[in-house]
Amino acid sequence: MAQHITADIAANVWKVLVTEGSDVAAGDPLVILESMKMEIPIEAESAGTVTKLAVSEGDVLDEGDLIAEIS
Image (cartoon, rainbow, N blue to C red; front, side, top):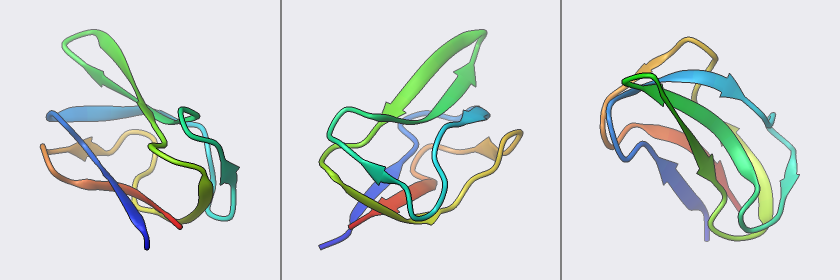
């Protein structure tokens, strides 16, 4: 079952650390968001492969927006 990683808060995508097809372990950072001058790493909840990357650096996200899918 695919794991959907979503934004917890409205933020800007500061840095993307993975690409589609990347293998990740639980706790690996996927992207770093920036909100109110704070950097917020978004991590994989479990191990798998990034099957969809829905953001690019500079994107503006609202709470609940999809960041990535991992299977």
